[in-house]
Image 1 (spheres, protein in one colour):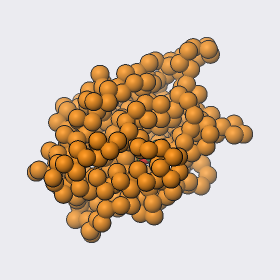
Image 2 (cartoon, rainbow, N blue to C red):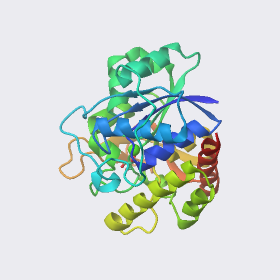
Image 3 (tube, protein in one colour):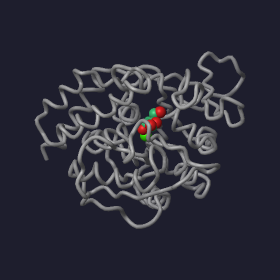
Image 4 (cartoon, rainbow, N blue to C red):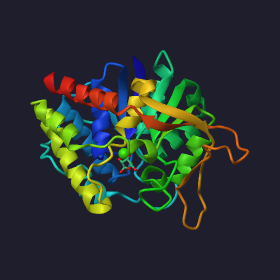
Length: 311
Ligand code: BDR
Ligand code: CA
């Protein structure tokens, strides 16, 4: 199975990304690292511990990373994910802890020691990843690829032009897209194909496990948010799409393109400029996800929640 590190900011969809990464046998989850994004770092880290506790994931190290973006102040998404960053279920006090030290140090240690190159799966702002690449240039040789959730081939969800993860730390995203490493971008254009429909919700409830119920409660809160803020009847489950791409690349079709991060635009800071049609004479630096096999995606997600819930 493919060794991965999940770098996240849970977050309702990050929570499901953790479950998919821990519960699917095609990936080997080496660590969970946290970053400030959907909520402040203390809360996203607590939420990672909550999710692992609820799912009985006790053997995966969790380390906290950057508390603010490389430049400027932190923008959080409490309007989407609530005061806790993971509103909905009643989580008790988590029994799963964190390991000491910074997330970037844990990533670097794992990369140096693991016998084969490791895939990084960032599902939050790219601050930790950018710091890893700039502080430890030799880490690149140990990274197989970076498969991230962020950006969009079209419009944004935080500003008209920018998707949240890129908007929060555009300088970090710029470093990642210009790193020369293989980068796969799973943006809003593809994650909006992963809608938590009433049928999906019913399947989670139908698992009959505590974890299935927790997931259903998370998704119910998430659905309320998307209904209220965007008038969408079913919320897009962004982050697990990046994990799914690693689990089975044929689940998520990609196109090669040049991707640039807008750093200075008056109204477009944090936008990903994706040149799918090759208008610009710029080299290809990313694979851009364009199509999701929805049926297989939901089978894998629900399968992972089912497997973890029965352990
Ligand atoms: C991204 O922003 C966050 O709110 C979600 O967790 C996801 O990673 C979607 O734009
Ligand atoms: Ca996220």
